[in-house]
Image 1 (cartoon, rainbow, N blue to C red):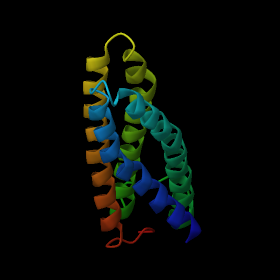
Image 2 (cartoon, rainbow, N blue to C red):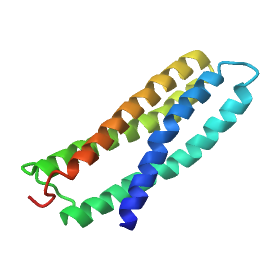
Image 3 (cartoon, rainbow, N blue to C red):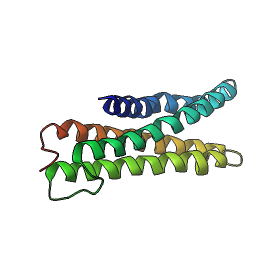
Length: 146
């Protein structure tokens, strides 16, 4: 249960922080608010690294504890959904990394482009996060070992 709790809390922290992050990006367009918005986005990034790491580590641990192995069999409906959820989590992780390490540095020379791409990337992460949550909700209907 501890690993489940860590997984749920870190996943909801990651996805739940994205709407306020979108507001911070929008606030960074306003010259009077830019400094505070950028500082807040930097704090988000630091905490986001921890949340993403916890999601990935607890997810791998949960897979091992529930399925009994890290290799999955796509013949199982549960394990098929789990594979899709893993792919969604990896896509979210790639988006987060691209946003942080490719798009944020773009802000130096192209601030408006950087902000626009950050907004799109964060919105995509939210959509993918909601898909992951829906998949998790459907897990209760399946046998993980079948």
